[in-house]
Amino acid sequence: MFELVFLGTAASAPSIQRGLSAAVLMHREYRFLIDCGESTQRQILRSGLGFKRLDRILLTHGHLDHILGLGGLASTFARWEAIGDMQIHGGAWALQRVRELMRVAFGAGEARLHVQYHAMSPGILLEDDKFRVRAFPVEHRRTEAFGFSFEEKSRRAFLPEKAEALGVPVGPVRRDLVGGKPVTLPDGRVIAPDDVLGPPNAGARVVFVGDAGRVDDLVVDAAGADLLAIEATYTEAEREIAAEFGHLTAHQAAWLAREANVGALVLHHISRRYSARDILDEACAVFPQTIVARDFDMFRVVKQREIERLDVRQRGENEGLAEAG
Ligand SMILES: [Zn+2]
Ligand SMILES: [Zn+2]
Image 1 (cartoon, rainbow, N blue to C red):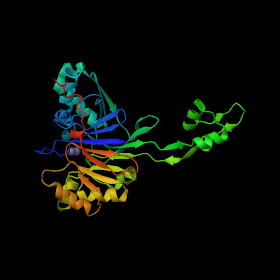
Image 2 (image 1 turned 90 degrees about the vertical axis):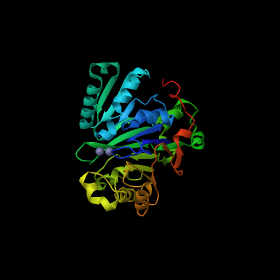
Image 3 (image 1 turned 45 degrees about the vertical axis):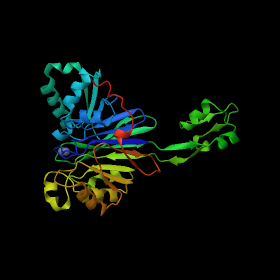
Image 4 (image 1 turned 120 degrees about the horizontal axis):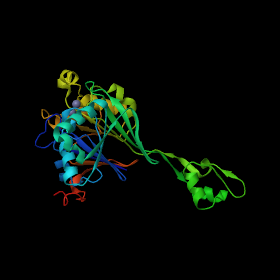
């Protein structure tokens, strides 16, 4: 299961309803902060998510509306939250911008917080036996931008009746078989994982793209995602301006969702010039399973289940609020 929370859904400047770009992706014990626009720390507090374990940050790119909140967040981590470490993953240009920002904000005081910068390249960013995060390139005004694919690995169910019939004893050998290792029984017979495992069940997948100037090169990376989140800064009426500034129209985002055959499309990075209705109507004409994200929307993604849309503030987890000082 994945939970994707939008903390800020505005494009380039905030509005009364929308903060600047930031989202949190949660999976088991993992929490990733994706982008950190100005005032993200206040949105984190309002969301009730708290700062704990929010120390791993993925940057889509280095434009100010996606990184300016990092200075404030770093300051709070060091002063109030006793978090000594911050891991920032991003393209080379984004990291250079963040380094400069931190230097200006803290000077020599930066040492209070240990910021680790991880230069990202396309491919696997993090992985354990059940889950992986992949980064892939996104074209957006030559900023070395990235999108992210959060994937549950496919799993094969253990079939106890088959194991029983083959005389596989309960215990560690069964664990080895589930882990894909063949085992030799005391009587010398070799049992292969295929003998006791069912067909692979695909896991859930969430694809997150920030700012993007085109979509034709994203079809393969978005293909089959249960949820695709991507920017929709403009409508077709301003297609030329969108292209000039390296942004998408709602129509283009929906085209990608349709071509990539995703389960649901969630649009963010919404400009003040449009109502959510304008964006939604244009996208739905191409891809009906579209939602325009609001700040504090939480999407719960479980394989083979309808995507749930909740308000993260109703989640009842107020860790962090009490201790924020
Ligand atoms: Zn932006
Ligand atoms: Zn941008």
